[in-house]
Length: 170
Image (cartoon, rainbow, N blue to C red):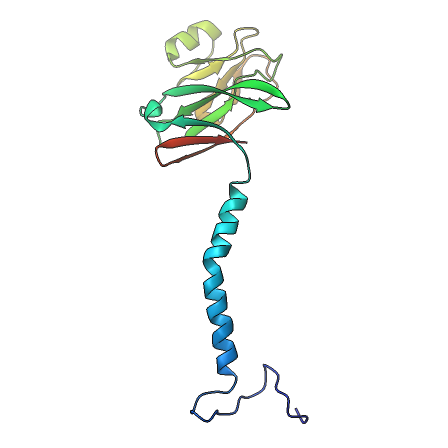
């Protein structure tokens, strides 16, 4: 440039100490950016945690595959029953216990033979079943409806296990 000002794309002249004249501001920007990283991580973690925790369950209660814990949570101003189940492959399943058909409360059937006999369904693993109209939900397959008149899976919830606790959110 002819007026003596510098732009970031121009060549830098050497300073008296042999460095680049434009290097000090660049170093400052880099240091400020590096110093801001922990704050950015904290903000993004807080944003992830913005979803309210519906329930907290002690992970020791869910030590074995197919173990379950029931809880209740607030949904649209009402208390709703829910369940969290530890699946054998390290995954988790959590949902409302309100049937998507006629809003009856479903039950967890950990005994596969009992589920088969009660609901006349080819269950391969524990299921959630509705005693009102015999809808059956496969918890190992994300709550997929495998029997009965239910039009859709139960309300699915998110699960995060950390620090010996299981946190359930929407």
